[in-house]
Length: 292
Ligand code: ADP
Ligand code: MG
Image (cartoon, rainbow, N blue to C red; front, top):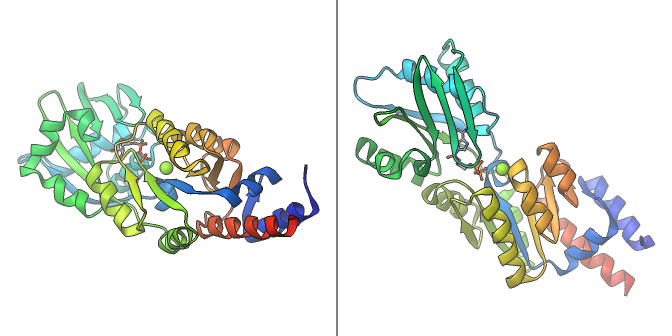
């Protein structure tokens, strides 16, 4: 049931860009003890840019990029879209039509182009040892700068890597600081590598971070947080985040997120503004003090 107090709080929230799909969600924020954030597209803008391209000696960078981008063109992962944009717009390359393609969510893509099969994605996916030894471990430094490293291999081994840098949203650090000042535990959950996650977590100053998280593992992490903190919100933008949003006590979607995330969520941040979460918690506390 919607009380006059919650109705006024909901409309107050809507004016500020936070949409509640019911009074109960606003009510629940009063008891919020922890918030889990997805990394890409949530704490960061989700528009990574290619910053580095490293190829094996004797390999043409353009030839490499043509193959990789032609395969990634078929994937709608944000990393894939950025790689394609880089190849087309920054390097003016003409892409090819791959002969086959398989998307492996949370890992990468497998594709055949000009008769050769490529595996593109994270280290575990293409082979951790080959990935980490490429160019004497060049990826380590890139990852510690908070860049996501995408590895590409053919049948023989790693041919090259790409580093992509996504920027942390301008209000993220302040938004997390305010939540922490309200006594709320903050967590970042990501499918990205440990090194990259560590750098972004440090920048955002979250209390805790979990990396190399497969989509199903995000749900398990939220369940675990619920045991530790009883009332937990999950903030996300992707299809991958939807199950975790549904598992949390208050699912919060970024307004520019995918349809599935928006449909699953209890609350929508209309302008993607993370500061609105702490505002909503304060609003909920004020509302509850009025009711009593
Ligand atoms: P996140 O939780 O950061 O949004 P995902 O779970 O979607 O990430 O993917 C985890 C990791 O798998 C990415 O950081 C990336 O290394 C790799 N990956 C997934 N899809 C692709 C792709 N299409 N191309 C390259 N790498 C990919
Ligand atoms: Mg995301």
